[in-house]
Image 1: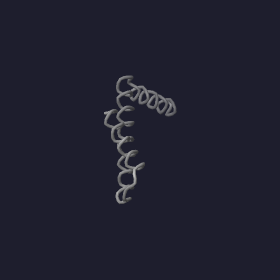
Image 2: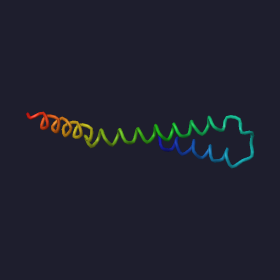
Image 3: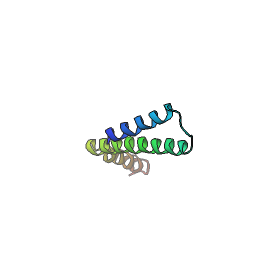
Image 4: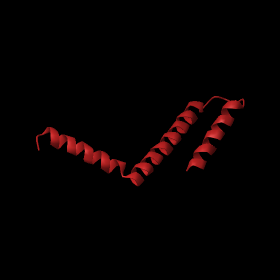
Length: 71
């Protein structure tokens, strides 16, 4: 997935650095941002799944709510 992101980025950079018609440049930039965001999101989810960070966060949050509720 990371190699795909790098390939898309390099292609976009090549397109920006070479003279061309600017039609579609904004669309390409948005597409690049979406690819990078999706990649980062996937990496965060993979990390959170392996470290059980989401479960820990949920346990801490529920514990604080119960504590504040007087339980």
